[in-house]
Length: 345
Image 1 (tube, rainbow, N blue to C red):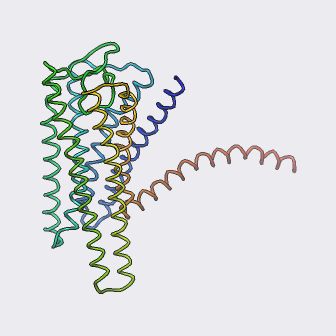
Image 2: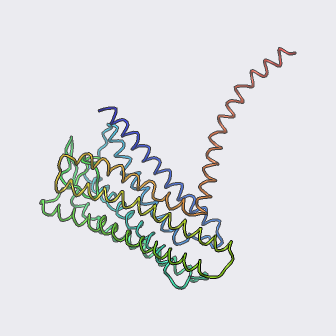
């Protein structure tokens, strides 16, 4: 049993730290691209991507890492006041990550379906303002929805188990913090509302948005194929459109797979709690970490410019890692060469 737990902890740790590094890398590359662009501004889609990475990064560092530390057997606990603050932040960032993912999908869908392309500095500025207004609304509304955590969060000691889950995938109190409602009815009402608004609704909307996007892509490809133009330019447009379709399909598959497991696990735990709950929660726990860590990379790797930047960055890191090893090997061989030269003399 201990070996299984050790393997689970290792896999979970790899997911956690790979996700943290991946989100930091995407944020860094996006800002480098903006710095090198003519406008020196983040593109609207890149702005949404940065917000998604920030929400996922904050969730990984302040929620998933403590879960990993807890799985290693280390006891970390917070005071009741800090429990309320951290529970608020966990629910807030998790919900923001879900809705910003939907916003990214909706933005690409609206871009494909719009009849007139925004041109000129003023047009791009208006589009950036609309995106920032949308993102501000996402962060603000989800913060308001997370405020009950300041009231219905408490601190427990010992090996207590959670009786009710709200956007969570662990049966143990995280850092000693748990939800505590005055009555079971209020708890189930809040948990159901939380699942409906922050899990099920974005899930359904994202599936619908991406199906509409794929339909628009297919329609646009047929229009480009039927229209006039050079063969090279036509092939280039079709290649770009197909890559966009593949990225969208990969993102929606990752989103749907991970979030369906999350919703199923939390609902099953709250309303059934049968013999399969532990296995289902473990799978959902890993899937949540997988999505938080790798959803921005799926989008970034489908973006040609970001993909090239990430490739160059990884090559530089590999070169920096190899350089100390080469230097150490050279210094090690230097006395041998000197001795051989002295013997020859």
